[in-house]
Length: 243
View 1 (tube, rainbow, N blue to C red):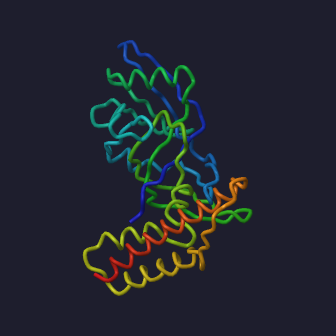
View 2 (cartoon, rainbow, N blue to C red):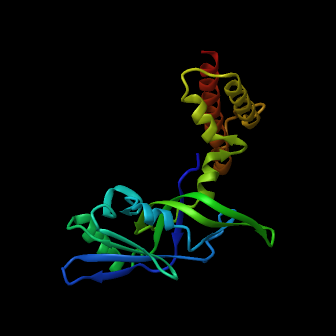
View 3 (cartoon, one colour):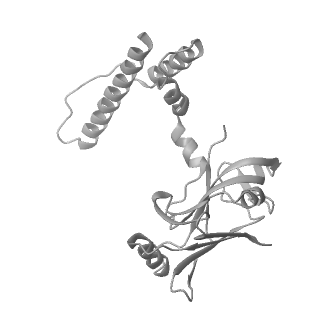
């Protein structure tokens, strides 16, 4: 199953105040514009949102990806999505809430002026250009629009968190959530144990550090703390394996 990806846009979010007195945040997801480098590049094609729009999907507008701070939604007409020649037009008609008023003012004062959107790739064309992987997204399932994103969230950043020093944390998490392990699960656990063993110092020497050498004291403390953490993690995995 493909997971939701996020792409953050550097273009400014626009403010509007309608004749109805309601405040609005307006942004554009541009077509045929290269994304930031995420281990690869992505281009949103003009056809990408056609199915989302045709199906009338109930896309939400959020403040900084926070599902508790909904700024608009397609279902009640407070989020307007429209495909144009230059991109997908997104207009959120803000509710009369404290967080929505705060959101409007934060954009107005220039604290946060970027937007992001969450989507699941459905169809894409992949090419290699100048040694880099380039993905042309021809169809995506749009799930949310977010305004006020101070720190971009990219798939490349997530992948770093999922895999550390050869340990696939996402796969390990999925395995450990199971009530019953299968043979391939034991193999994954064994691989993790071996990787953790490789990280552990072969021999830990605890010496009384000299008082004047504060850097050595800190370094020794860090090694001990890391060793204790990895040892406990290893013991926990071994305990699960034995059940």
